Length: 165
Length: 316
Image (cartoon, rainbow over all chains, first blue to last red):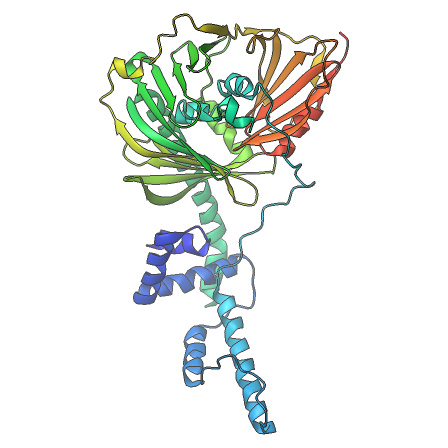
């Protein structure tokens, strides 16, 4: 369970495994505690000084529960200044709630370094002897010792008359 | 609270370091397990090779006691390959050609040796991924994340029972899959010698023997090796019905890049140059000193092109 929660934090869980873990976090108080604890640890390790105090989630959730849901607020005509003020206040509370949520969301994974130059576009047709090159090359690919001959399928599959179309 | 924070700050980096080392050891153990399973098990199965929106189905059968393996491509142009300890034969029934590759005297068909597995860790961050069910097999993922953008990353899924590689995904720097191999059906054991025999007698077919022999390609060099890639072989060989072709192979322990050098006829059309791709393979062709240089490798386009651009000839 703990492994799944930490994998989820790192964004490494997908599909059903992720759904199951989210489910667990909803149902199981201990799992949810672990989720919070891991984030606290991760923040501490990353040197984030502004740790959110204990019970923050509960307090925001409680405040939110008492607020009316604001669905697509539009500029309705004939509002009094007081009504406008109330709407703005509701909107800013929603913004605070969003910031609260982001603070608990897993940190974005660091992006892989971008290629220094744009990768060249592979637009040329395969050489006529492509299959000869591929066959000659595969025999030296260490991949073969992990998956047998499977990489040898990497040849041009079209019959000569199909590829010339 | 303060005590807890200090404890977390002090312990966690240490724990996570120990954890990382342990995780990498476990992941290397799984790579070793896949390698052992591929070599020591007899199996027959059907797998799908997917790349660039295409997919091809093939059948693979291995008889471990005879060290013989047979691959039959079921889609597109019929092709059958049979590998024994010393040779790979490729049967092309439509053109009645059999191509033969032999093991060179100084070099076995490549294997990831235990030492080489460890050197993999210089070029890739190796870790265990998730457990996932694929084609009825409970699989452990092993993730190889490249440490630079000169090579692809890999997600390898091994059957937790047998260690067989059930799915292999090659991913680019943006995290997109560039190609994928997946077994859709796999039987372990129950392989008879008949099942690895070539289907074609190949009587009267043209035999194209590569006749590879180790050689020094005088005057030719790759003046800047790609970081992490080392030359593993240098030889001359035949390809198709051509004159002898030089071949240099560079590898980072998992990916390999071949450089082919062949003389061009004096009066001929200009060589077709440029970059082509097929799944994770890139092929780059350029002309150098009246020779055609073709670089073929399972590496990003920029890496293949970098090696090609570094090929030079100096009159010996």
